[in-house]
Every structure is written in structure tokens, then in C-alpha cells.
Amino acid sequence: MSSTDQADPPPLYAAREPVFPKRVKGSFRSLKWVLMAVMLGIYYITPWIRWDRGPALPDQAVLVDLANRRFFFFMVEIWPHEFYFVAGLLIMAGLGLFLFTSAAGRVWCGYACPQTVWTDLFILVERWVEGDRNARIRLLRQKWDAEKARKRITKWVLWLLISVATGGAWVFYFTDAPELLKNLFVGAAHPVAYTTIAVMTATTFAFGGFAREQICIYACPWPRIQAAMMDEDTLVIAYREWRGEPRGKLHKGVTPEGQGDCIDCNACFAVCPMGIDIRNGQQLECITCGLCIDACNEMMDKIGKPRGLISYMALKDEAMERAGGHPKNVWKHIFRPRTLLYFTLWAGIGVALVVALFMRSPIDFNLTPNRDPLYVIQGDGSVRNIYTMRLRNKAGDETTFRITVTGEHGEPRTDLHLLLEGAEGNEISAPADETLTQRVYIEAPADSRPALADRTELRVWVEEVGAPARAAVDTVFNGTGKRD
Image (tube, rainbow, N blue to C red; front, side, top):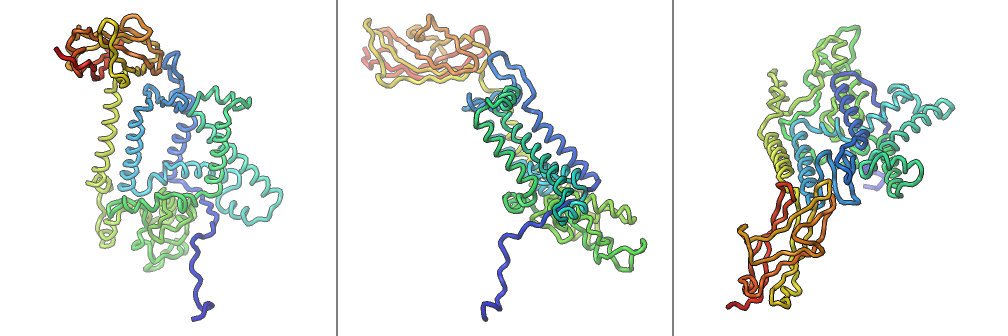
């Protein structure tokens, strides 16, 4: 066979066909509007919420303080050594995706994914400037003139303003928002802030305005992973072709004998933000947003047919419905062993994080013995060990702490004496919300048991003066090893 007779292989990437979803009304569209308003409101407003933590701490309710390596979330403060809280939240987010996908398919993609939310916002602006679907299609095919230039420039300027606000809101999470806003306008902000805003602006403008569904199809890995999370009980959007076929046009309100309920109006296709026809079956591109359900239900109402030609349903119900039976209750699909397992794991991690959060000590410190030398013999024959103490004061004010030493079981040790470098007595003040590094000495008289033994187990206590907060760390005292 000659090379000319061979068919050309299909392209690996199909050129983008612009998608202009039509406006639709319905319960799923209303739900998407509400969720979009709530999520955008949270994103843009949160950095401006104030939370009084005292004079020494920032008063921004949610702040990722990279300079001081801390994270503030209202009354919660996370330090670098407590990163396991962040890891736990990430694990919960992953299990949450598994849970929702197993129960109802790609509902995250259809309702809460940032790409979907911002694309919805950009389409709203586009529809406001250029008109609904047919008007936008005509404008696309129209040659460039004053009208097309005016509408396109207006749309792009509004998109750009939204993109700048998106990038600006992002950097406000990492430093004091009012101060940064002032510095941004006078040119005094750090170059990293301007760079971050520029990158976020460019990506938001490109992804939400032009790439849109291409990000979901080609860039996002989740459509390919979701298949492992779904089974025959998962609720997905489906077309009941046994009820709708054979499809055909409706003539003067009369349905021909043998024709299905689908009148081939293409309303479901026209409203789809992914540009797919759900009547062709489940497809990788479907984000289960439910807009095709709203469009089809509206059309069924107009022609006097029952709703539900397109709706959420499970594969397990398909054979039952084809045979004329009734589908299972939707809650039986949602609450089943698999989803209950995901929920149990998700809730268990959440409860563990909350318990750990409330059980963590307000005092955090460690004591490291100096190994070179192990001990020092003083002029009077007493033996001294040197330690480095790091005491983290998590309070919002300067706090005085008392350092004491006991035996390994908490019993008093009168044969040991604790000294703090540069301090009188065993009390020391730690600055607010900082880590204090302090040299600590523990001494034993020459003829005492700790001085003569090789090793003596100790417990060093730190307690806040005038408060019940206290913590302890176990360590050892190294003696000469010259027993009597």
C-alpha cells in the first residue's frame, strides 16, 4: 500500500473551538451563582478582616507570615514545627475530593474549582458586554470594525481589572493588607509583590478569558484520576436515551408516534461551558455542573413532558429504569460503604487535628547538653554541665518563666543547682511571640552523688510565673564517674 493510500493519524491536540455557553435559569444555575458569590467574597474579603492578638502580633485574621515563619488563622497560630497541621489539612482536602467524587462525580470541578469560578465570572462579564450566545457567535464571525473593537476592548479591560484584583488579593494574604495596598500605589512595595501580582494577573486573564475549558481538558489531571474514584453507584449527569430516543422535532405541539421525548433542540449543548453534548454519553470533559439539566427541564416544561430526561443518576439505576423499574433513592447512592469509609477517614483526621490543636502546650522548649566538654570541674571541686535551652514564648506579651530541675520522676533534687547565664535566680523573661536561646548551667557539689556518678537522669521544668502553664524535658547530668 502506498503512503498516499494510508490515512493520516488523528492529531494529538485538536484546535480549540470557541465555546459560548447560553444563559440558562434553574436550580443548578442558581446554586452556582450562590457558590460563586460566596467563594469570591471569601477570597477577596478575608485579608481585610481584623483580629486583635495584642500589641506584639499582627491584627490580620488570616495571614501567612513567611518572614517570621508562622501562619495565623483567627485565634489559631501555627509555628514552623507544627506544620503537621497543614499536612493534615492537605490530607483532608484530598480525602474530601475522593469523598465528593465517589458520591457525585466531578462536583468539585463543576461548582468549586477556582478555574470554574473565575471562568463563570469572565463569561458573565462577556455576556454583559457582548450579549448572549448568538450575539457572541455573530461578533466572533464579524469583521473588525468600531463596534467589535469597542466591545472587545471593554471586555478585556474588565477582565484585566478582575485579574489584577485576583493577583492583588493573593499577595494580601502574605503581609498586612492595608499597609501593602498603600505601598503598592506609591511604588514602595517589595518587587516580589509586584511580580506575584503580574504573574497571577496574566494567568487569571489567560485561563479564565481564553483557555477556559482547555485547562480542564488538557492541563488538569483530575479528569483522568476521577475514574478510579467512581463506581456504578456514583451519581453522574446522564441522558436517558431510552426515554428520549428516537429524537425528532416537535411539529405544532404534536409528537409523532414512536418518537421519544427529546425534540433535538440542542438546549443542553448550547448551555454547556465545556462545549459537549451530554446525549453522547459520559465524557472526560463533563464537569457535572448541572446546567444541561436546567436547560432540558425548562424545555420539558414548555412541551408538557416530565422533567428528568437529563439528570443525575447512577449506572446501577440504568438497567433498572430501562426495565421499567424505579431508581434507588439518591441518598442510598450517597451513603454507602465506600463514601462512609472516606467520610470516616476525613472526619477522623479532622477530629485528631482539633484535639491536637487544643492539647498543644502554650510553652515549647528544648534543652540540648553541650558535648564538648561533657562536664567542667570548678575550682571548689563541684561539677558543672552546660546546656543550650531554646524557649518559645507563644503568648502575645513578654512573659516571665521559672526554670527548675527535678529527678526523672519529678522528685526534688537538693543536690543540684540550676543557673541561668546573665540572670539572677532561676527566672527569665522571654520576648512576645519569639524563641529565646539561653545558656543553662546545672551544678553538683563535689561530694554529691550526681558529681560522682557517670550519668544522672534529670527533668528540667519550665513554668510561666503566675500561670498554670508548664512543660518539662528529660535530659542527663554527666558526672566524673569516680564513685566512692
